[in-house]
Length: 189
Image 1: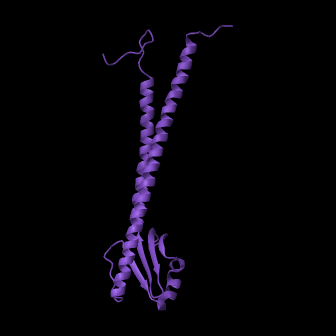
Image 2: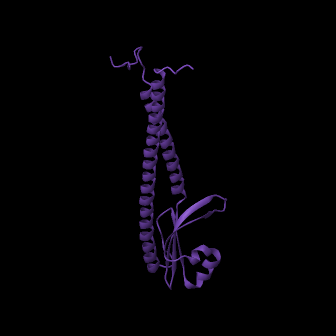
Image 3: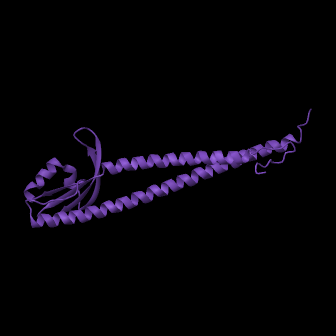
């Protein structure tokens, strides 16, 4: 029975070790990039949500003050926000026309729906109900949601690119040229 060449055995173990090292670096690169992407997305969402909630709270206060000054002509100078005020004689129309608004307590609520053309949209709704007037401020979040989807696609792409770069870098380092005596050949002569 022929014995295996002892010089070939260490090469096989070196190749297996090299493959494990490459795989470890690729997984480390993927894990770190994915963790970074998740952290960036989480922080971005928290900051954005805090800013929108602060904006909504300030604007509903401003709208309530303007309505108190002139109930026939309250204005709100923001394009993405639509303001509504309903007096007690119109509370029932809110139940009929906007049933999901009718049940909401005071605060900021995230809602979504479908517009007349069938396109999906999302908005945040600030609600303040007093016995005299119910105030609703609808902030259109559709553009923000589209931007978030694009951001997420970019983050996923970055994770893939950096994982591939990690694989390429480690495989290039690990497959260095060898001289005839088995020592690495330096390209920096």
